[in-house]
Image 1 (tube, rainbow, N blue to C red):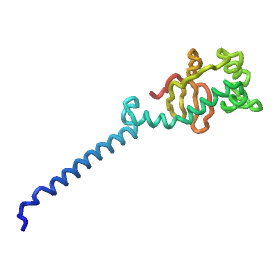
Image 2: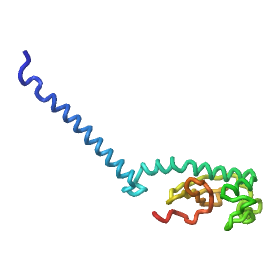
Image 3: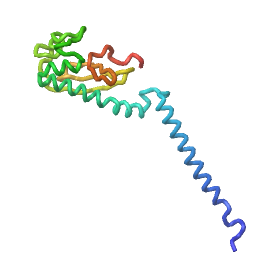
Image 4: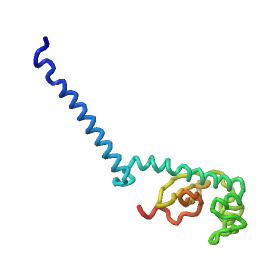
Length: 160
């Protein structure tokens, strides 16, 4: 016959384990909520860094495609990525100006190498900073889901 106090304290150990897991879970949930709601400044927020890298992958791919089109001298297709065509040129960026910036008579007529240095989410778009040939830095603005390319009006996002 088992003694009256033989099982004394066994329930307490299980309760303390459950309490410990509950506190750890609540702490992790609180951190996720703080980081997820952007209540922690972005430079200190590791979740935002990972999230923004994943979120801007398609923007990086669009800029890589644009630069590769310019490298292949396919200027009409590159101009189309700006949301413009020969038939319907952009009002503020005609094809002749595009060729001045990116064509054979531009400041960097041949793009030998390029490096995407930074991608920054800014409001409804993304600023992508590209180093071209190691001597020219260009900041592109890609608007939302349209993925049209343009020059960024800012060096860094103004809401920071």
